[in-house]
Amino acid sequence: MTPETGSTELWKITLGELDEKMGVKIVEESVDRVVATMPVEGNRQSFGLLHGGASLAVGEAVGSWAAVIHASTLGKTAVGVDVSATHHKSAREGTITITATPIHLGGTLTTHEVLITNETGQRLCTLRITNLLLDRKA
Image 1: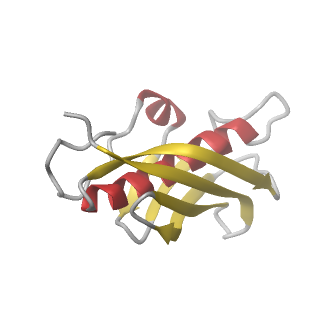
Image 2: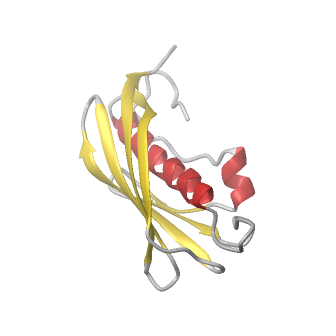
């Protein structure tokens, strides 16, 4: 996720291996908001519910992408330093939407709220992720 050294061009999201296996699709990407979707099918635990770990993995990815996009405007990159989540409700089927919006966009730290909702807009999970902004390595 490291943009080219010396460039202040907005970083564009590239899916990683796990993102692809989970079926993540990017809907929107900007400094103000990153939105992705993911199917519940293929991401369920043994009781047939959306796996909490899948929610955390996709939420952390979307929040980190949002931080890297902001960091790219400063010629920097970002690394996660803290993530926490509260699971409110689960899902057995359908597609979830993951939306990251900034709480704080600084020159050293960013904090994003990441909401995971179902197809009817019900909140399934709320994450908060903090990323440290670093100078890019040559």
